[in-house]
Image 1: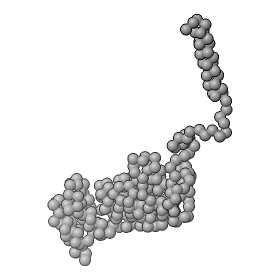
Image 2: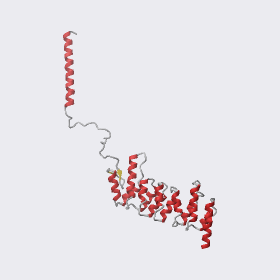
Image 3: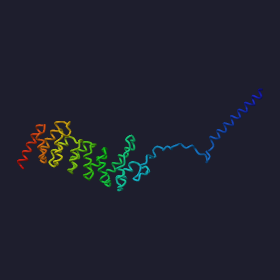
Image 4: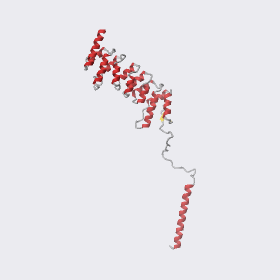
Length: 265
């Protein structure tokens, strides 16, 4: 190839490069045509902070629009929609691995538990089956003794909560609390000393450390059994059994109390 031909080829190549660069620049700078459709991702991401979150099914089972936790909590706390309250009370909880959903569900159960429009049987169900302190504390102040009794018998109670229920004005609640293994020995002793305690519960307390909870601290259990023997409401049958108690102090107290009751009877 002659020098003239080589020069012509280089000039043509440079012109082609310039034309390609101009076309690329024009494509970049020109606006998108109205009919041009941008590629769509499989799932559009939600921008952070918009309040988007998992929707909750309503009472009919259909997905409801999402609302913040505080809004839903206040709505459930004040609503008189019995069907909705029942549905929330019986709704299965999310798996604990789903931490946000699980925390939201238990918080909303607290609102349901504190609403007196929630059916009594649902409040008793929550008091009996729920292990969550926020719900049990709410239900421990329920005006219905059936609900407080269910809380008192719940073995997931904190000991301070069940201890508080041993002082409940309703005898059935006090008795259920004293039978709960979560009750402290201090509360059991005070219960055994309570002259208003019924004979059935006294009979139960008289078995602590012997046939019931045989591994209990011996000294504490003996103190409770001796207090039972000295309680004026203890039955003769319980006194007779305590008269043969393996702890000599308990047996002596029971025999004295039995002899006194026979003299007065």
